[in-house]
Image 1 (tube, rainbow, N blue to C red):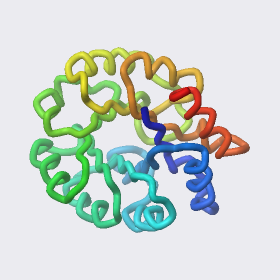
Image 2 (cartoon, rainbow, N blue to C red):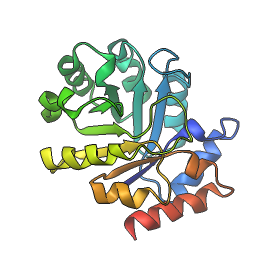
Image 3 (cartoon, one colour):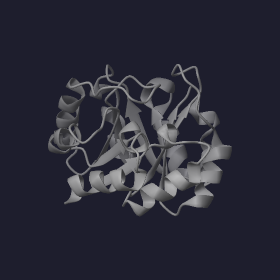
Image 4 (tube, rainbow, N blue to C red):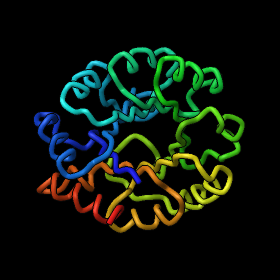
Amino acid sequence: MIIAPSVLNANFLNLEADIKATEKGGADWIHLDIMDGNFVPNISFGPGIAAQIRKCTKLPLDCHLMIEHPEQHIAEFAKAGVQYITVHAEATKHLDRLLNQIRELGCKAGVSINPATPLEDIAEVLDLADLVLIMSVNPGFGGQSLIPYCLEKVRRLRAMKPNLQIEIDGGVNLETLPLAKQAGVNVFVVGSAIFGAKNVEEETRRFCSLLKG
């Protein structure tokens, strides 16, 4: 069971301190939401910031590319020092090739799908994926509410592939985390629910205790 705080919701004027606080609170990974303003209606940051984040934590970096033409950028993120690179099935025409390219770069390969995208769209590449990220909100902004039918999608995916790492991103808080865990999630991206708290370290610890206690 893995807690992966998303720095999209962190204070970028105090980013290193926020990351250190989650680390002290027991976080397992750091989640990087990369947005290009095209695939999603928001812009976040690129490989340069990812490389700086790499310098301030030893935790695995979980890089979620919400961008068009991800095949043009995966090498830059691998060079920045991330461990996981997750791409959207909706963003590439050649998903099989792209997942293999991520692995060839020495990273773990992940595939993500939006709430309305059926599991059937990724069924043929599940054996190439080290994790599958189920978006539980429409991607682009933090602070949204979890879409309930996405948990049923998790249940079906867990039945299809019992040993797969299944990640959920969007609307995860202290109330929805147990529901997601029960559905079969084992990697939980948490953004505003942690970084919006007065004490980031203590709030991270609360999530870790709820998940692993």
